Image (cartoon, rainbow, N blue to C red; front, side):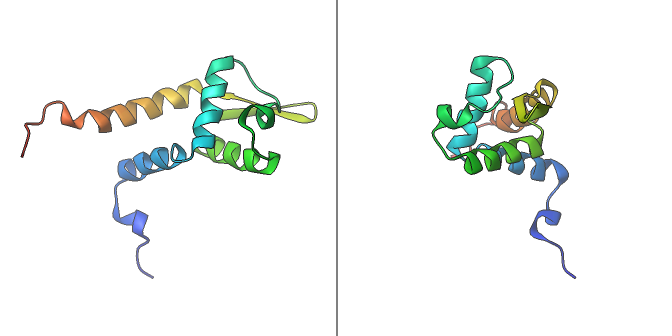
Length: 109
C-alpha cells in the first residue's frame, strides 16, 4: 500500500499543519480566547458564551483536547476544561520558529 500524503512530510511539518488546522475554525479560536480570558476551568457555560449547540462545542473541545492545547477534568457530571499551559508553550515555540523564518531572509523579488 502507498504512503498517505502526511507520511511524505516530516514530523515537524505535520505538527505545524495540525496546529494551523486547529486554529482554522473561529469557534475553536473563540473557545481558546474564552479560556484565557477567564483564567480558570470552565464547566459547561461555553454554549452560552460561544453561541453554538452543545454537540458542536463538544466536537471543537474534542479537537482542542486531542491536540493537547486544553485539558479536561471530570467534576461531578461535568467535564471542566482549561488551557494546558505546557502544551500551549510547546505549540508557541514550534509556531514561532516556523513564523520567524523570514527574519534573516533577504528579499528575493
